[in-house]
Image 1 (cartoon, rainbow, N blue to C red):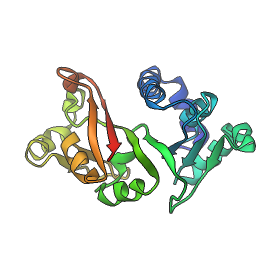
Image 2: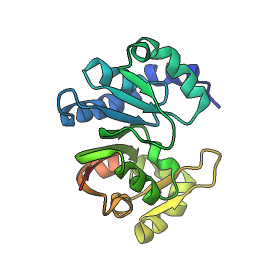
Image 3: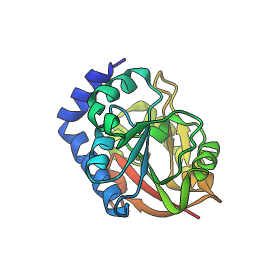
Image 4: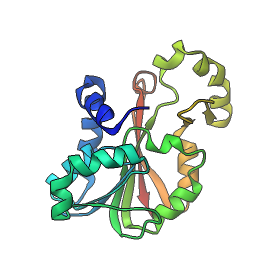
Length: 209
């Protein structure tokens, strides 16, 4: 198990992860109206939250891991003191324009129905949820036995889980969209085309109805 500091240092120095993070951050910032507030759901050590706040978006941060949360409080202490970043806990009550969930946060849920119902109470009309999730069709994972053992299940049911300490679930975009309905509709999905075979992450934009 990584400490918050170990995770932070690893994720900041991993070139592959930096590319994915920057793609997600750019998409989020392009979608957010000027000055709109955001909830970073599963905020980790606050890397994304710090950027959103620096770009004029008041940012609530929810992080269930105590180790990550402790390091977030250090990493974002100046923004927290200025209240441009505000740590929050469940149940969520503060209204926001958008919820962003980077680096497979939603893959830790076995089912998203209750989560999207809860998020619908805090995301304003025409706001959105932007989630970065593991791409279940990524062929780079085909070298692993667990991927090959579950490909038929994925194609038949659109989802599967792997028995492990990390408790990770994988979903097709359609499964997530059905869980989000009727509160959110799937507006955009990346990658497209051949990218489904080559990209390890997928970005889902779900608009509040």
